[in-house]
Image 1 (tube, rainbow, N blue to C red):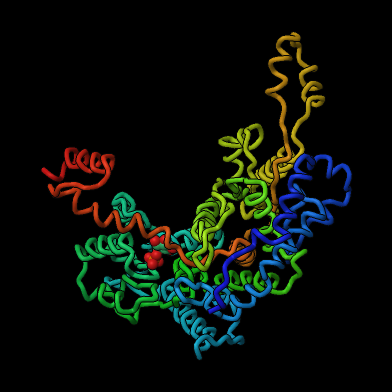
Image 2: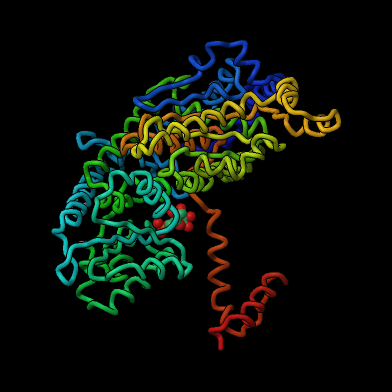
Length: 553
Ligand SMILES: O=P(O)(O)OC[C@H]1O[C@H](O)[C@H](O)[C@@H](O)[C@@H]1O
């Protein structure tokens, strides 16, 4: 464990310099910066093997970047990167190493943690998972009636759902033609019931995915799936239809799943960083081991870039520092993610967990209170749908909303010229957000209409766009397993870098525990007559439920 030292980043000279610099430059308009700097795009883009980050449409000068890099150096970013990569226990509150990057290392590598080569462990499990995926995909793994598997249901929540779900959706062009994968996460019975309605138990395989194997939502869904299955088949048939992915062998066995059907991973893989592990099993089943290996390769390419490129040309570091600039020094509360790709429509949800569960914290890694703003609210929606929903606020609202536009340059679905329309919309939005529309431009437009002076006075303010709204554009050559691997690892490292700057442990999540404790207390009270001792609102709601709940009789 690293020596305990309290986070003092906000008392360093560079922190004060950044505040001062923000005050001195906040009047600058990006439209003017572009006019003054014809080479702005050339200077402010980074490319890595088919992935381009254009960060020129940000409120940045060369000096801003210099100061932000000085901030990263002051926070000992290079040291923390080495500590993570080397397997030090940087998740101090849980006393764990943080090694999702080891999941992407090649078989030829080795990395010892507590005397164990974790790369060897990773590849042993990958080989087993690949062999299992191949057997299901080829029709060699058969159900209890001897039929091949046609449907896979992943039962998991949080990190055991969002990552694999997003990756699975994004890679639809690579799916096995005769295998459908479903994801059930919500404890709302509607989710499992509506999924099971479509399925035949003889041809359905369930993956119970839970790092801890104690998550009530997942256990309840798994029990519901098992009861449904046992209406048709016998207990001995469970082995052909239920597998588990977990770190908790004992709980898996107690649940009734044969440990031979369990794919393990390790406590040094955080749930929201686990898609690369056996938690990716539903993805392996859908796209096959070869494509999954390419996804891992893409992640590794980003790791190599992250661990070796100077900060000034390091994609995750730049995205993280730009985010810190807006969050901490501009007071921006949110960050929007807009994938201009239907397959990536669940990316905002995945990044929500990745970022907000990692950096949504008010204390530093050693428990010290942080006296500045940390992780933003992450939100977003696929383009162009988002344009028709909330872009009004981005263009003419009162908030600063930094955003990422993710735009594939090529489509797997060449439907007429629709892809060009999609891309044109994405680029146009970043231009409009940056430039805005000034009075002269708005007046020129109004002048072409036959309007009275009074109408022009009323309309002119409504036609103005302040602009100066920042965005990054991530141009992806084509959405493939490899490019998706790079994109996902990019966001993981971005979150890590921001955590380091703010002095946060990005790998624990104590904030989700309290609600779980109270839910466990409220659950029995919903259906008994026990006196209630919550606040008046919670008491009132429980009483109201008791009076409405039809199954109480
Ligand atoms: O994989 P599991 O142990 O079932 O955990 C599922 C999820 O639930 C927890 O409440 C955490 O907030 C998440 O980080 C985790 O991914």
